[in-house]
Every structure is written in structure tokens, then in C-alpha cells.
Length: 147
Image: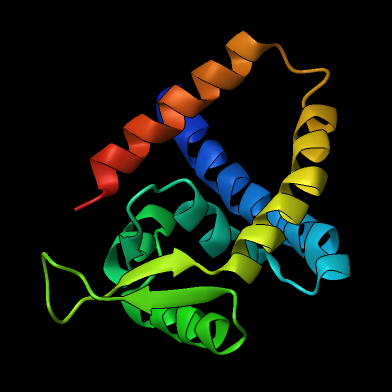
């Protein structure tokens, strides 16, 4: 087996991304706990908030790289808790659109008041060009593996 530098760098990157994912989940849980949320809810709220026309559960799942079933479970609970609401989808009768409720919009505003300073503070020592390069590489890899 050939141990090329590119192969080794890619495998190290993959392991680092796995580690970063775990750390981001822990950070998200800590950041949102005072708001009565979790990082899982944070991700769903953020994806929906960035959509102006609502999103379907499969669409949310695609953005988050999670199974439709996992996202369906969390959105159902969030609807019961009053954070989200389902609305009919004129383009697909069986796949409702998910929107933030009024309570969900308030939660998103509270999240932003915690998330934005965290994002700035977490990246003070990383040049914007490095963040942009990292984002471009991650997006290229997502595009390659997103089948």
C-alpha cells in the first residue's frame, strides 16, 4: 500500500473533521443549554431560519447530512414544543414545509445573540482567507461525496 502525502493528509483531514464535528456538538450543547435547546435543535432552527420559503424535512436532512427519519423525529418534537410549524406544500402534497413559529423565531433571535459572539471569538486568530479556503475545500469534498 502506497502512503502518499496526499492520502495521509486527506485521512488526517477526515479524522480532524470528525473530531471537529464532535467538538461543535459539545460547544452547541453548552451554548444553547441556557436557552433550553440542544445543538440538534440549533442546527434545525438555523437551517430553517436561513430559508425564506420554508423547507421540507428531506431538504433539511440534505443540508445537515442526516437521515430524513432523524430530522423527522426532531422536527415532530419541535412542532409539539411550539418551535416549528408544518404548512402545506403547494409543490408536494405529502411533504409539508417546515417554518419557524413565533416562538421559534424568538429562539433564533436568542441563539444569534449567543452564536454570533461565539463565532467571532472562536475565529479571532484565524485569517478570513484561511476560513474561506477551508470552507471551499469542505464544500468540494461534500460535493464529491454527496450522491
